[in-house]
Length: 140
Image (cartoon, rainbow, N blue to C red; front, side):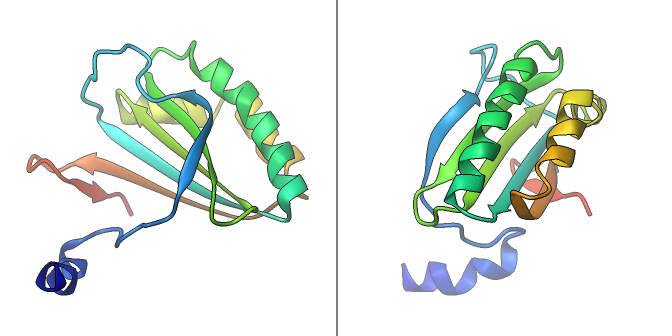
């Protein structure tokens, strides 16, 4: 394992993430057919406190419910961090880049970020796309 741990980081786009999460709401594979996606979107949210995280999670549950109706949304999975009481992660998969943009421009999602300014300390988002080698490249 030592040679692997030493050699791998230079080939990775994201590094090792050994954080523990548990599912809160949403869906990992809406269709149940494990359809290949064109883009993966990963969001990490740092909240102001445990109470702030709970508020954000309640709001995200409403967004997850709406995402079930979106045509090109394959996954919208909301997770809470088990190692830190103030962190949330959202894992999303989309049929196309356009489907991701439609989701991000939805009035309810835009409103969520506006009303959550007091609860959210920071937000980190990354998008990934297939590179025809079975791995994903990060969009910059």
